[in-house]
Length: 434
Image (cartoon, rainbow, N blue to C red; front, side, top):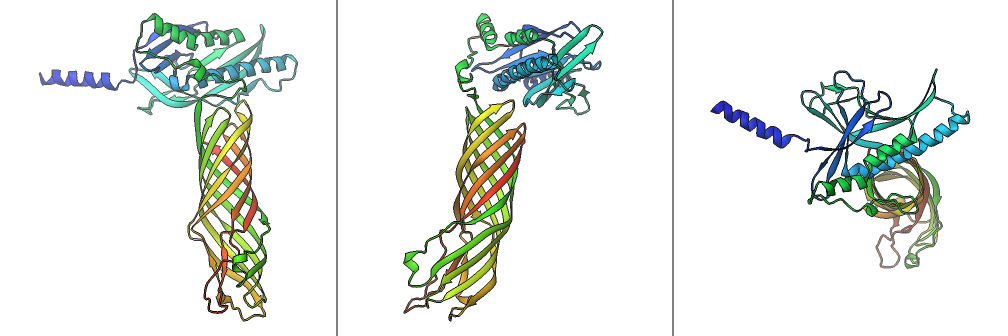
Protein backbone atom coordinates (compact mmCIF):
# COMPACT_ATOMS: atom_id res chain seq x y z
CA UNK A 1 0.00 0.00 0.00
CA UNK A 2 2.84 2.39 0.88
CA UNK A 3 4.49 1.73 -2.45
CA UNK A 4 1.18 2.26 -4.27
CA UNK A 5 0.71 5.62 -2.51
CA UNK A 6 4.20 6.68 -3.57
CA UNK A 7 3.46 5.82 -7.18
CA UNK A 8 0.18 7.77 -7.08
CA UNK A 9 1.88 10.84 -5.53
CA UNK A 10 4.64 10.72 -8.15
CA UNK A 11 2.12 10.44 -10.98
CA UNK A 12 0.06 13.37 -9.68
CA UNK A 13 3.21 15.53 -9.30
CA UNK A 14 4.34 14.67 -12.80
CA UNK A 15 0.93 15.65 -14.13
CA UNK A 16 0.84 18.97 -12.24
CA UNK A 17 4.36 20.06 -13.15
CA UNK A 18 4.47 18.82 -16.73
CA UNK A 19 4.73 22.02 -18.86
CA UNK A 20 3.17 20.36 -21.91
CA UNK A 21 -0.48 21.29 -22.38
CA UNK A 22 -2.86 19.13 -24.41
CA UNK A 23 -2.09 19.68 -28.08
CA UNK A 24 -4.10 19.17 -31.26
CA UNK A 25 -2.78 19.21 -34.81
CA UNK A 26 -3.85 22.15 -37.02
CA UNK A 27 -1.53 21.58 -39.99
CA UNK A 28 1.96 20.59 -41.01
CA UNK A 29 5.20 22.13 -42.17
CA UNK A 30 6.67 20.57 -45.33
CA UNK A 31 10.47 20.51 -45.34
CA UNK A 32 11.86 20.75 -48.90
CA UNK A 33 15.22 19.38 -47.79
CA UNK A 34 14.00 15.85 -47.05
CA UNK A 35 10.42 15.96 -48.33
CA UNK A 36 8.93 15.14 -44.92
CA UNK A 37 5.98 16.77 -43.17
CA UNK A 38 6.23 17.97 -39.56
CA UNK A 39 3.15 18.46 -37.40
CA UNK A 40 2.04 21.92 -36.24
CA UNK A 41 -0.12 21.67 -33.13
CA UNK A 42 -1.86 24.08 -30.82
CA UNK A 43 -2.65 24.08 -27.12
CA UNK A 44 -5.36 26.42 -25.90
CA UNK A 45 -6.46 27.98 -22.65
CA UNK A 46 -9.05 30.64 -21.85
CA UNK A 47 -8.64 34.43 -22.26
CA UNK A 48 -6.74 34.17 -25.52
CA UNK A 49 -3.83 32.15 -24.15
CA UNK A 50 -2.43 29.68 -26.68
CA UNK A 51 0.82 28.11 -27.86
CA UNK A 52 1.83 26.83 -31.29
CA UNK A 53 4.07 23.74 -31.28
CA UNK A 54 5.99 23.58 -34.56
CA UNK A 55 7.97 20.39 -35.15
CA UNK A 56 10.98 21.07 -37.34
CA UNK A 57 13.80 19.44 -39.30
CA UNK A 58 16.97 18.34 -37.48
CA UNK A 59 20.17 16.42 -38.27
CA UNK A 60 20.38 15.32 -34.62
CA UNK A 61 20.19 11.50 -34.78
CA UNK A 62 19.95 11.22 -30.99
CA UNK A 63 17.04 13.67 -30.62
CA UNK A 64 15.32 13.96 -34.04
CA UNK A 65 11.99 15.08 -32.55
CA UNK A 66 11.80 18.74 -31.54
CA UNK A 67 11.00 22.26 -32.64
CA UNK A 68 9.88 25.71 -31.51
CA UNK A 69 7.01 26.98 -29.38
CA UNK A 70 5.34 30.27 -30.34
CA UNK A 71 3.28 31.57 -27.43
CA UNK A 72 0.52 34.17 -27.76
CA UNK A 73 2.70 36.94 -26.25
CA UNK A 74 5.30 36.52 -28.99
CA UNK A 75 3.02 35.39 -31.83
CA UNK A 76 2.62 38.71 -33.66
CA UNK A 77 6.31 39.51 -33.31
CA UNK A 78 7.18 36.12 -34.84
CA UNK A 79 4.78 36.71 -37.73
CA UNK A 80 6.23 40.19 -38.36
CA UNK A 81 9.79 38.83 -38.27
CA UNK A 82 8.92 36.03 -40.69
CA UNK A 83 7.34 38.53 -43.08
CA UNK A 84 10.46 40.65 -42.78
CA UNK A 85 12.62 37.62 -43.58
CA UNK A 86 10.34 36.88 -46.55
CA UNK A 87 10.96 40.34 -47.99
CA UNK A 88 14.72 40.10 -47.44
CA UNK A 89 14.66 36.69 -49.15
CA UNK A 90 12.95 38.26 -52.18
CA UNK A 91 15.44 41.16 -52.26
CA UNK A 92 18.50 38.89 -51.98
CA UNK A 93 17.29 36.54 -54.72
CA UNK A 94 16.66 39.54 -56.96
CA UNK A 95 20.11 40.95 -56.15
CA UNK A 96 21.81 37.65 -56.94
CA UNK A 97 20.02 37.28 -60.25
CA UNK A 98 21.40 40.69 -61.16
CA UNK A 99 24.89 39.26 -60.38
CA UNK A 100 25.37 41.58 -57.43
CA UNK A 101 25.33 39.17 -54.47
CA UNK A 102 28.84 39.11 -53.01
CA UNK A 103 28.42 36.05 -50.79
CA UNK A 104 26.46 32.83 -50.84
CA UNK A 105 25.41 32.90 -47.17
CA UNK A 106 24.08 35.80 -45.16
CA UNK A 107 22.81 36.11 -41.59
CA UNK A 108 19.74 38.36 -41.60
CA UNK A 109 19.56 41.13 -38.99
CA UNK A 110 16.35 39.96 -37.37
CA UNK A 111 16.01 39.81 -33.59
CA UNK A 112 13.54 37.08 -32.72
CA UNK A 113 13.01 34.79 -29.72
CA UNK A 114 10.94 31.71 -29.03
CA UNK A 115 10.81 28.71 -26.71
CA UNK A 116 12.21 25.42 -28.00
CA UNK A 117 11.77 21.76 -27.08
CA UNK A 118 12.97 18.26 -27.88
CA UNK A 119 11.91 14.82 -26.83
CA UNK A 120 14.15 12.17 -25.28
CA UNK A 121 12.75 9.87 -22.61
CA UNK A 122 10.97 13.03 -21.39
CA UNK A 123 10.14 16.52 -22.60
CA UNK A 124 13.05 18.99 -22.58
CA UNK A 125 12.67 22.76 -22.91
CA UNK A 126 14.72 25.91 -23.37
CA UNK A 127 13.09 29.34 -23.01
CA UNK A 128 13.52 32.66 -24.84
CA UNK A 129 15.97 31.16 -27.28
CA UNK A 130 17.34 33.52 -29.95
CA UNK A 131 16.31 32.32 -33.40
CA UNK A 132 18.80 32.81 -36.23
CA UNK A 133 17.56 33.76 -39.72
CA UNK A 134 19.91 32.75 -42.57
CA UNK A 135 19.79 33.21 -46.33
CA UNK A 136 21.83 30.77 -48.41
CA UNK A 137 22.51 30.28 -52.11
CA UNK A 138 23.41 26.73 -53.19
CA UNK A 139 24.52 25.89 -56.73
CA UNK A 140 24.95 22.34 -58.01
CA UNK A 141 24.68 20.42 -61.28
CA UNK A 142 20.90 20.82 -61.26
CA UNK A 143 21.00 24.60 -60.89
CA UNK A 144 20.77 27.24 -58.16
CA UNK A 145 18.51 27.13 -55.11
CA UNK A 146 17.89 29.83 -52.53
CA UNK A 147 17.19 28.87 -48.92
CA UNK A 148 15.66 30.76 -46.01
CA UNK A 149 16.52 28.99 -42.76
CA UNK A 150 15.17 29.76 -39.29
CA UNK A 151 17.29 27.92 -36.74
CA UNK A 152 17.28 27.44 -32.99
CA UNK A 153 20.98 26.56 -33.04
CA UNK A 154 22.42 24.22 -30.41
CA UNK A 155 20.76 24.27 -27.01
CA UNK A 156 20.49 22.19 -23.88
CA UNK A 157 17.58 21.12 -21.69
CA UNK A 158 16.56 23.76 -19.16
CA UNK A 159 16.22 21.11 -16.47
CA UNK A 160 19.17 18.92 -17.48
CA UNK A 161 22.19 20.66 -19.02
CA UNK A 162 23.72 17.28 -19.87
CA UNK A 163 21.04 16.73 -22.50
CA UNK A 164 21.99 18.76 -25.57
CA UNK A 165 20.69 18.92 -29.11
CA UNK A 166 22.11 20.34 -32.33
CA UNK A 167 18.87 22.23 -32.82
CA UNK A 168 15.88 22.43 -35.16
CA UNK A 169 15.32 24.26 -38.43
CA UNK A 170 12.49 25.64 -40.54
CA UNK A 171 13.71 25.69 -44.15
CA UNK A 172 12.05 27.31 -47.16
CA UNK A 173 13.11 27.40 -50.81
CA UNK A 174 10.49 29.72 -52.26
CA UNK A 175 8.15 32.55 -51.40
CA UNK A 176 5.19 30.21 -51.93
CA UNK A 177 6.51 27.88 -49.22
CA UNK A 178 6.83 30.81 -46.80
CA UNK A 179 3.33 32.03 -47.63
CA UNK A 180 1.87 28.54 -47.16
CA UNK A 181 3.51 28.30 -43.72
CA UNK A 182 2.22 31.76 -42.77
CA UNK A 183 -1.27 30.71 -43.83
CA UNK A 184 -1.16 27.54 -41.69
CA UNK A 185 -0.25 29.48 -38.54
CA UNK A 186 -2.36 32.56 -39.31
CA UNK A 187 -4.59 34.04 -36.62
CA UNK A 188 -7.60 33.34 -38.86
CA UNK A 189 -6.75 29.61 -38.80
CA UNK A 190 -6.29 29.70 -35.01
CA UNK A 191 -9.66 31.42 -34.53
CA UNK A 192 -11.37 29.06 -36.97
CA UNK A 193 -9.96 26.04 -35.17
CA UNK A 194 -11.07 27.37 -31.79
CA UNK A 195 -14.60 27.86 -33.14
CA UNK A 196 -14.69 24.46 -34.84
CA UNK A 197 -13.65 22.62 -31.70
CA UNK A 198 -16.21 24.50 -29.59
CA UNK A 199 -13.64 25.92 -27.23
CA UNK A 200 -15.96 28.43 -25.56
CA UNK A 201 -13.33 29.52 -23.01
CA UNK A 202 -10.91 30.48 -25.75
CA UNK A 203 -11.14 34.19 -26.58
CA UNK A 204 -8.49 35.46 -28.98
CA UNK A 205 -7.58 39.12 -28.80
CA UNK A 206 -8.83 41.17 -31.73
CA UNK A 207 -6.29 41.38 -34.51
CA UNK A 208 -6.68 45.19 -34.94
CA UNK A 209 -5.03 45.60 -31.53
CA UNK A 210 -1.90 44.04 -32.97
CA UNK A 211 -1.98 45.20 -36.57
CA UNK A 212 0.44 47.80 -37.81
CA UNK A 213 -1.04 51.23 -38.56
CA UNK A 214 -0.56 52.95 -41.89
CA UNK A 215 2.79 54.39 -40.74
CA UNK A 216 4.17 50.86 -40.45
CA UNK A 217 5.07 51.19 -36.77
CA UNK A 218 4.22 48.27 -34.44
CA UNK A 219 1.05 48.90 -32.41
CA UNK A 220 1.91 46.49 -29.61
CA UNK A 221 3.53 47.57 -26.36
CA UNK A 222 7.05 46.12 -26.20
CA UNK A 223 9.92 46.47 -23.74
CA UNK A 224 13.70 46.62 -24.06
CA UNK A 225 16.40 46.95 -21.45
CA UNK A 226 20.16 46.97 -21.41
CA UNK A 227 23.37 48.65 -20.29
CA UNK A 228 24.61 52.07 -21.38
CA UNK A 229 27.73 54.24 -21.06
CA UNK A 230 28.54 57.77 -22.22
CA UNK A 231 31.06 60.60 -22.32
CA UNK A 232 30.67 64.41 -22.44
CA UNK A 233 32.30 67.01 -24.64
CA UNK A 234 31.76 70.30 -22.82
CA UNK A 235 30.37 73.34 -24.60
CA UNK A 236 30.98 75.63 -21.61
CA UNK A 237 28.71 77.86 -19.56
CA UNK A 238 25.65 79.65 -20.88
CA UNK A 239 25.57 83.46 -20.59
CA UNK A 240 24.24 84.62 -17.25
CA UNK A 241 22.82 87.84 -15.76
CA UNK A 242 23.68 88.85 -12.22
CA UNK A 243 20.96 88.35 -9.61
CA UNK A 244 19.67 91.80 -8.65
CA UNK A 245 18.76 90.59 -5.16
CA UNK A 246 22.42 90.21 -4.18
CA UNK A 247 23.89 93.31 -5.83
CA UNK A 248 24.35 95.04 -2.50
CA UNK A 249 26.77 92.21 -1.71
CA UNK A 250 28.43 90.68 -4.79
CA UNK A 251 27.83 90.72 -8.53
CA UNK A 252 28.91 87.86 -10.77
CA UNK A 253 30.48 89.36 -13.88
CA UNK A 254 31.78 86.34 -15.79
CA UNK A 255 32.04 82.61 -15.25
CA UNK A 256 33.56 79.88 -17.39
CA UNK A 257 32.80 76.28 -16.52
CA UNK A 258 33.57 73.08 -18.38
CA UNK A 259 33.35 69.32 -17.84
CA UNK A 260 36.62 67.40 -18.07
CA UNK A 261 36.73 63.60 -18.35
CA UNK A 262 33.03 63.31 -17.54
CA UNK A 263 31.74 59.73 -17.91
CA UNK A 264 28.54 57.90 -17.02
CA UNK A 265 27.50 54.25 -16.99
CA UNK A 266 24.47 52.28 -15.91
CA UNK A 267 21.28 50.66 -17.17
CA UNK A 268 18.27 51.69 -19.23
CA UNK A 269 14.78 50.42 -19.98
CA UNK A 270 12.56 51.31 -22.94
CA UNK A 271 8.80 50.96 -23.37
CA UNK A 272 7.76 51.12 -27.06
CA UNK A 273 4.28 51.83 -28.38
CA UNK A 274 3.72 52.46 -32.07
CA UNK A 275 6.45 54.97 -32.94
CA UNK A 276 6.75 56.44 -29.44
CA UNK A 277 8.86 55.26 -26.56
CA UNK A 278 9.67 56.14 -22.96
CA UNK A 279 13.22 55.50 -21.75
CA UNK A 280 14.26 55.90 -18.10
CA UNK A 281 17.96 55.49 -17.31
CA UNK A 282 19.86 54.93 -14.07
CA UNK A 283 23.46 56.13 -14.36
CA UNK A 284 26.44 56.68 -12.11
CA UNK A 285 28.28 59.80 -13.32
CA UNK A 286 31.71 61.04 -12.40
CA UNK A 287 34.27 63.50 -13.73
CA UNK A 288 36.05 66.77 -13.17
CA UNK A 289 34.56 70.26 -13.50
CA UNK A 290 36.77 73.32 -13.97
CA UNK A 291 35.54 76.80 -12.98
CA UNK A 292 36.94 80.30 -13.37
CA UNK A 293 34.90 83.15 -11.84
CA UNK A 294 35.32 86.90 -11.87
CA UNK A 295 32.98 88.80 -9.57
CA UNK A 296 32.68 92.15 -7.81
CA UNK A 297 32.65 91.82 -4.04
CA UNK A 298 30.79 93.93 -1.45
CA UNK A 299 33.64 96.53 -1.56
CA UNK A 300 33.15 96.96 -5.32
CA UNK A 301 36.50 95.30 -5.99
CA UNK A 302 37.14 92.58 -8.55
CA UNK A 303 37.91 89.03 -7.40
CA UNK A 304 39.37 86.26 -9.60
CA UNK A 305 38.71 82.77 -8.32
CA UNK A 306 39.11 79.35 -9.97
CA UNK A 307 38.42 75.86 -8.63
CA UNK A 308 38.24 72.19 -9.59
CA UNK A 309 35.29 70.03 -8.67
CA UNK A 310 35.19 66.23 -8.54
CA UNK A 311 31.70 65.20 -9.54
CA UNK A 312 29.94 62.05 -8.25
CA UNK A 313 26.21 61.73 -8.81
CA UNK A 314 23.27 59.51 -9.69
CA UNK A 315 21.60 60.57 -12.94
CA UNK A 316 18.05 59.52 -13.84
CA UNK A 317 17.21 60.79 -17.34
CA UNK A 318 13.56 60.32 -18.32
CA UNK A 319 13.50 60.50 -22.12
CA UNK A 320 10.39 60.58 -24.31
CA UNK A 321 11.11 59.86 -27.95
CA UNK A 322 9.73 59.08 -31.39
CA UNK A 323 11.12 56.72 -34.02
CA UNK A 324 11.45 58.75 -37.21
CA UNK A 325 12.45 55.75 -39.34
CA UNK A 326 12.38 52.01 -38.69
CA UNK A 327 13.37 49.02 -40.83
CA UNK A 328 14.96 45.60 -40.34
CA UNK A 329 15.91 45.99 -36.67
CA UNK A 330 17.19 49.51 -37.31
CA UNK A 331 15.67 52.83 -36.36
CA UNK A 332 16.42 56.53 -36.21
CA UNK A 333 15.04 58.35 -33.15
CA UNK A 334 14.58 61.84 -31.71
CA UNK A 335 13.99 62.41 -28.00
CA UNK A 336 14.00 64.89 -25.12
CA UNK A 337 13.24 64.99 -21.42
CA UNK A 338 14.34 65.91 -17.90
CA UNK A 339 17.45 64.55 -16.21
CA UNK A 340 17.18 64.21 -12.42
CA UNK A 341 20.53 64.43 -10.60
CA UNK A 342 21.31 63.36 -7.04
CA UNK A 343 24.67 64.15 -5.46
CA UNK A 344 26.72 61.22 -4.13
CA UNK A 345 29.53 63.03 -2.36
CA UNK A 346 31.01 65.51 -4.84
CA UNK A 347 33.94 67.66 -3.66
CA UNK A 348 35.84 70.75 -4.79
CA UNK A 349 39.18 72.48 -4.18
CA UNK A 350 40.47 76.01 -4.93
CA UNK A 351 43.09 76.48 -7.66
CA UNK A 352 43.61 80.25 -7.77
CA UNK A 353 42.51 83.33 -5.82
CA UNK A 354 43.40 86.98 -6.51
CA UNK A 355 41.97 90.36 -5.39
CA UNK A 356 43.00 93.81 -4.17
CA UNK A 357 40.05 93.82 -1.77
CA UNK A 358 39.91 92.81 1.87
CA UNK A 359 37.86 89.75 0.82
CA UNK A 360 39.77 86.58 1.67
CA UNK A 361 39.55 83.04 0.38
CA UNK A 362 37.87 82.09 3.67
CA UNK A 363 35.00 84.36 2.66
CA UNK A 364 34.24 82.04 -0.27
CA UNK A 365 32.75 78.57 -0.02
CA UNK A 366 31.12 76.06 -2.33
CA UNK A 367 27.51 74.91 -2.08
CA UNK A 368 26.74 71.50 -3.61
CA UNK A 369 22.96 71.03 -4.06
CA UNK A 370 21.77 67.52 -3.12
CA UNK A 371 19.38 67.55 -6.10
CA UNK A 372 19.31 69.27 -9.47
CA UNK A 373 17.02 69.02 -12.50
CA UNK A 374 18.67 69.17 -15.93
CA UNK A 375 17.50 68.80 -19.54
CA UNK A 376 18.56 66.59 -22.44
CA UNK A 377 17.57 66.33 -26.10
CA UNK A 378 19.09 64.49 -29.00
CA UNK A 379 18.95 61.90 -31.75
CA UNK A 380 19.68 58.18 -31.64
CA UNK A 381 20.29 55.25 -33.95
CA UNK A 382 19.64 51.58 -33.17
CA UNK A 383 21.17 48.70 -35.07
CA UNK A 384 20.23 45.21 -33.89
CA UNK A 385 21.18 45.27 -30.17
CA UNK A 386 23.36 48.39 -30.36
CA UNK A 387 21.82 51.75 -29.36
CA UNK A 388 23.77 54.99 -29.98
CA UNK A 389 22.76 58.51 -28.90
CA UNK A 390 24.10 62.01 -29.47
CA UNK A 391 22.61 64.39 -26.89
CA UNK A 392 22.66 68.06 -26.00
CA UNK A 393 22.61 68.45 -22.22
CA UNK A 394 22.09 71.58 -20.14
CA UNK A 395 22.38 71.35 -16.37
CA UNK A 396 22.66 73.78 -13.44
CA UNK A 397 26.11 74.38 -12.03
CA UNK A 398 26.78 71.48 -9.61
CA UNK A 399 29.31 73.57 -7.59
CA UNK A 400 27.73 76.90 -6.69
CA UNK A 401 29.84 79.70 -5.20
CA UNK A 402 28.75 81.50 -2.04
CA UNK A 403 30.51 84.71 -0.86
CA UNK A 404 30.14 86.08 2.66
CA UNK A 405 28.27 89.39 2.85
CA UNK A 406 29.44 91.65 5.72
CA UNK A 407 28.06 94.95 4.43
CA UNK A 408 26.42 96.96 7.24
CA UNK A 409 24.88 94.71 9.87
CA UNK A 410 24.51 91.78 7.43
CA UNK A 411 26.30 88.48 7.87
CA UNK A 412 25.01 86.10 5.21
CA UNK A 413 26.33 83.82 2.45
CA UNK A 414 24.43 84.56 -0.78
CA UNK A 415 25.09 82.29 -3.79
CA UNK A 416 26.40 84.41 -6.66
CA UNK A 417 26.23 81.89 -9.53
CA UNK A 418 22.93 80.19 -8.80
CA UNK A 419 21.12 79.12 -11.97
CA UNK A 420 24.13 79.11 -14.28
CA UNK A 421 23.73 76.33 -16.89
CA UNK A 422 26.57 74.22 -18.23
CA UNK A 423 26.09 72.90 -21.76
CA UNK A 424 27.65 69.77 -23.21
CA UNK A 425 27.39 67.28 -26.04
CA UNK A 426 27.06 63.73 -24.80
CA UNK A 427 27.74 60.60 -26.81
CA UNK A 428 26.45 57.35 -25.35
CA UNK A 429 26.33 53.76 -26.56
CA UNK A 430 24.14 51.02 -25.15
CA UNK A 431 23.65 47.30 -25.62
CA UNK A 432 20.15 45.83 -25.45
CA UNK A 433 19.94 42.68 -23.35
CA UNK A 434 16.25 42.17 -24.22
